[in-house]
Length: 153
Image (cartoon, rainbow, N blue to C red; front, side, top):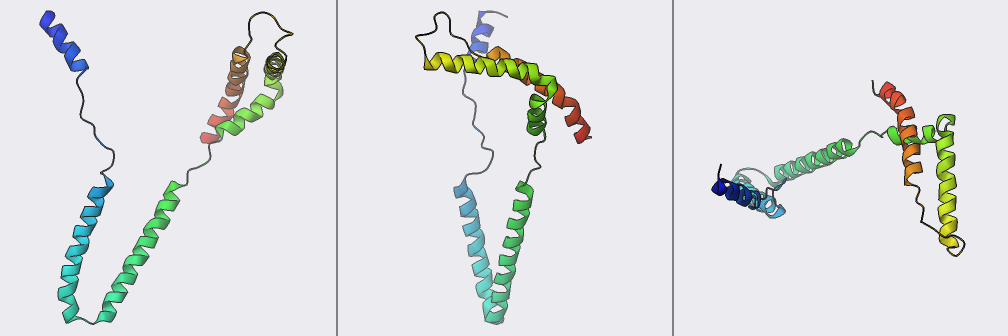
């Protein structure tokens, strides 16, 4: 492992990787559907001379029904169950177990808001309520965890 290997590693780290899309571009899908439609039109034109026009309307209606059924399936798939964690944490934050932490956090918020409204009253470093917020959040999470896992089983 010499100097050359080091430069090779560095240059490979900064090389540009190929970008891969998660889905094909929309233009590609449209071209494919246009090709598919033109093939159907050619086949439909040959079949049209052999069959009556009423049969074609029934086929179009069947296609529309299939499209509607697919849309309904997509809507059903999009619905996700509600996450119970935020509701459980809110309950726990308001419970007696986390009452001291909530009280400290609310007092801190009042001090900070008062300091912002009347900056001339207060001298010294500015205060934030990050520590109090984390204590309250930790308490609520610890309280909600057993309840959450009991629901998920």
